[in-house]
Length: 90
Image (cartoon, rainbow, N blue to C red):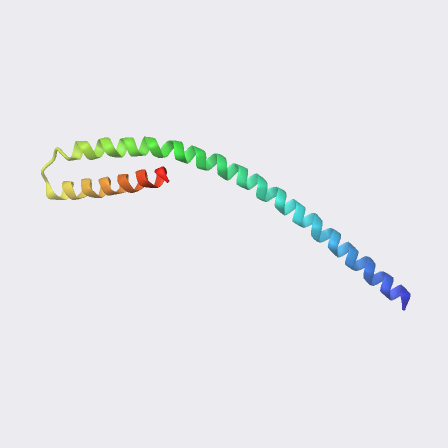
């Protein structure tokens, strides 16, 4: 009976060790992924300002046209520009 108990304790101990090893590897990968996501988000944030500037210039250019369809497109562009600008300010 003691041999069975010892074998069970050894198996449970090995299972816990294996689980801890996998958990540590997973946490290391999560940390790497978070670091890469942070770098990517910084790059995207820098590019948003460029896109907003270009969108504003296009909107100002299109305001010179008198077609209702073009004015509606300009309105949608202005709304999108405003939404993106408000999103970056938060």
